[in-house]
Length: 175
Ligand code: MG
Image 1 (cartoon, rainbow, N blue to C red):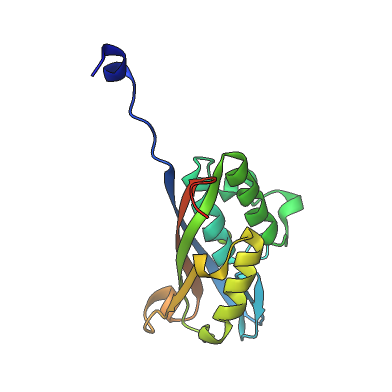
Image 2: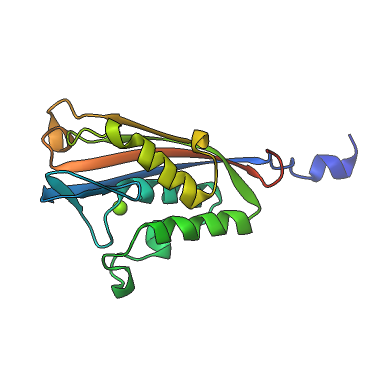
């Protein structure tokens, strides 16, 4: 190894990983906005924007993977223009920044923690909506659900939580 090679930092691998997490309070009265889909429900998520916990977690995972901060940096929750805002706007912005940084999505996986309503009938619509927003195939989008087993804020139906992990690759490294 030459002296210059020893002094140089190793090349950065073409993969990046990002983690997203979000919680919103649930109040009476539907529908429940999740993944850009309005789900018939007895509850809705409360927040400054449309309170879409899944899109928020995905947005944070993408931003984290490219080292671009978080959703609160881009879209402050005390800004008037973000009041009741469609969270699809947040994800579109994160996707644009991902592309501008030279990355594309390999895949993402997420877990929604919610006691009710039953979400499985809506997975198809949610995965399609997220895939459309990210302009990828639906098989790159994973969405799963867990209840709170009737324990704690999730289990008592007072909150919805989402965890998401996203894997990115330098543009052009995957098909
Ligand atoms: Mg949120």
